[in-house]
Length: 455
Ligand SMILES: *[C@@H]1O[C@H](CO)[C@@H](O)[C@H](O)[C@H]1NC(C)=O
Image (cartoon, rainbow, N blue to C red; front, side):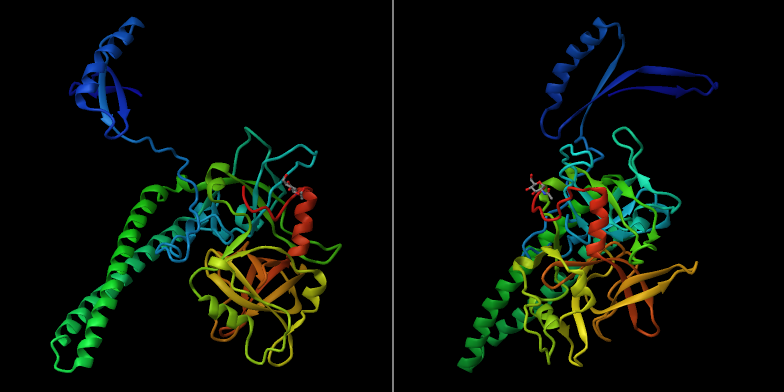
């Protein structure tokens, strides 16, 4: 790297300093003596090509590429960073934003991925796009957007807008704080038990000794977890806080939002973005929903099998390590006539989604299609997803747009695109049927493969 400094003098004139050559070495790979020894060689090299009076300055530094590191992998759920890392992992529901919409603070989620396999013209393609809503990926709705190919301007897509990133960092810190309080409590309890060891009562002594051993083991584990979380917090701040380093793709196709007036009156609010191989390939697993830590596997199972349940087919099986793989698509027939019934014998399908804003939520698709009229009187037909129950909270929130709704077996049901309060705590979420979205994607990418398990 070469630089020249212009020094402003008091007389309003100035002088141009010598040419300075900065040479950065990787930390701890060289010494001041080594650098001093090499400098004359460089200067004589420069003099040979006519550069006189250059000054060489050495410094230690690691070159940080703007590209940033690959997205994180999903760890085992025994890893203390398992849940707090989810805002930076390459799985469905990943929070996204675009460079174009950064100022609007518009955020959405990744619905699913697919391999293009072959282009429309039949040429082999290594491209892997992600799917979300057009309204997440593109600001205006005036025309169909299509990326023009190599060299054309790119509409960059990022993981986490500023707000979602900050929330992720705050969650890590909150987790460290919580574990810190737990550790303090253990220290107090251990101290009390150590007094109890002096008791006259042999039962109390035995209890105290066993208690001290057990709690010391827990305390050691908590301390280890705090250490790992602190290191993770540092890593996240160093590697990801610069928004440019969170770029991970660019918009490929974003047709104008429309209602399929001639056909089913479904809403087309879909867009794709091509994933950066370097960001995704290392930890890419295809279409997997990370069920996370909000519910235990047992709690989730209970939601799919409420009391008075009369259904016979398997609705949910906790997947190993909480990774639910997308395996198929809920058919049009099943959507119209759900084969499950709630305690009032009303048809229902229990569904779930993972979104960048409200994380994992469970809801209820009652098989009813909702008729929605927009501000211009345009009527559309939507899948309506109701909150699971009065206590469950809303199925979706702003920032979940674009996320994929699936049944408990990992079959794609719908692509979430909006929600509406319905008085009080009642909220309904609207989605476009997945079977239809997939058809539209196949019109654009005829060889799309939704079921690959690696890059
Ligand atoms: C896509 O390519 C993979 C690997 O070559 C192949 O296994 C798969 O069947 C293809 N899928 C489609 C839909 O063409």
